[in-house]
Image (cartoon, rainbow, N blue to C red; front, side, top):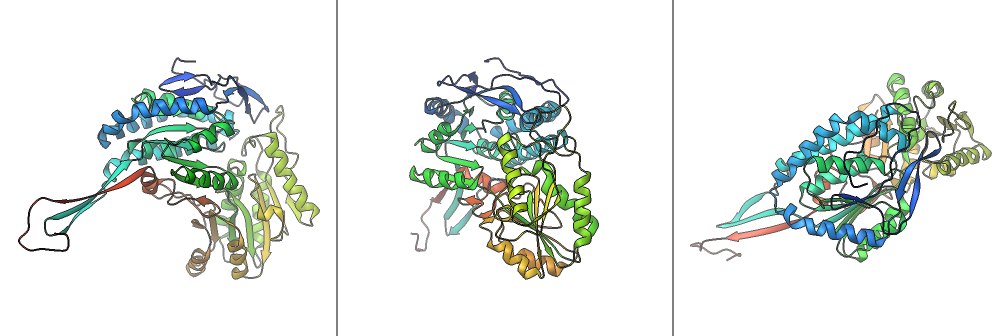
Length: 499
């Protein structure tokens, strides 16, 4: 599969076989040295739509060699010339929006509307990268008589990103624009569950004029990940996935002296107080916990109901029941994911909770896919697994408390710290909650408080390992090293400590 311009022509949900996803190394498609492959399952249909290669350490080494060879010439270009590629990438992504969205829907299981939203968000990330040419000035200052200090943001070199299944197009674009504009060359390891979004991005970047070897893709599983994190020549690695893996890779990467930023899991809390607007709150809560079938780290998973908010909860339940699986809510990524989600619901019910809205057994006519409908578990207690652990599905666990302080205590006790939201019409209540939340991304009447560019994405506590955030200027800083330059040209008539 060395030819370019792959095409996914389908514009509907009907099952469509696709190509084998090989590695992209030095501007060409190559099979893995291992000869191994695995199936890429369409979650809506529950069957393989193609194969993806399962690479090993030798493939990572080959990608590194290509990236290292391309580095000097790419790094030597002025930042404005590197940024020009991203303008063309944006144009090509917009021109191919429908293809990219339908391909994403088929490999990930999202509804077409949610898939289209992901691609559009990815385009925003490309726009942010293109704008860095006007924002990356490190600054300079005459710090003494005849003495000037300045900061230059220098590329790290060959860097890598390991990305998850839930946003196969957007999350790579959290990394690539900043890293490439900074002058790095890149090795991307997509999730083996969803390799096709990254595959199309590789072709789009090449068509946009990115030189061969600047972007490389290595597909595979554990062996490929370990080879990337252990490689002495790779200077920085970003990871998005589960907390246990983020923590492990952060520690393992530190042993080789590389920069590592790992975004992990989440258990996001929504706090609803009696003065909350019913119209704003109910629709927003439903969108938060069911969007992308709950398979996003920003999805609501615990609702802390303060006092008498039954009128709002009733509306949340009614709106949840009205959602149509297959149309309003997509499939979960695998049979294993579906079974795990259902197990959490079963265990909560066995522990005495009430299943207010039950998504177990959800089906779509004519589909053998992996479905879980919207589910609300009422009467939960903080010790239940559905409250403590990341479910990663369209499940909302409700805990009832008497006061805002009790709600905040429960949120603070979670080891995660990704996102939290307060629903209220009171500025004082909102400020009190925001100042006490143990979360890096907080919302007021917004249950998915994702920062839009140029603001950076990143949580706290067990939701992030490393320093700084993933997107925005923090992302640019992660992929660079600050070079501080102090200059003096002439002898001054008086002396200072720097003389």
